[in-house]
Image (cartoon, rainbow, N blue to C red):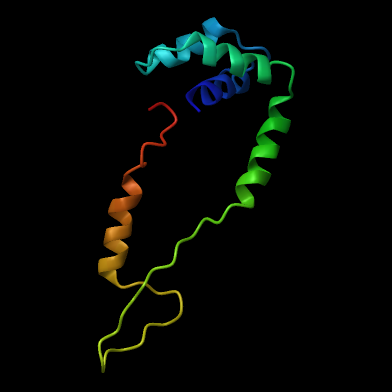
Amino acid sequence: MRYVVSYLLAALGDNTSPSAKDIKKILDSVGIEADDDQLNKVISELNSKNIEDVIAQGIRKLASMPAGRAVAISAAPGAAVLASGSVPAAAEEKESEESDDDMGFGSFD
């Protein structure tokens, strides 16, 4: 993922055909050492493609993926029933803390 993101950053910066050197420069700026085999594979796959088309295809694929998750709420007898879609403050706080963790899927991890 980091190689694709770096390639896209270089391409969106008006470099129509980023080289391995360009991508390594981006990765080095965030302290990541590039694997030449993976880097060359990404370059060979993306070099002949229109970046705007690649991004558009990616957006369409992401749009088809489920993005939400259900929050289970158990109400004690006599507790007020929550309106559809509302989440108690404790659940919102927990969800906020969880969203801060990128689960290891960061672009440059």
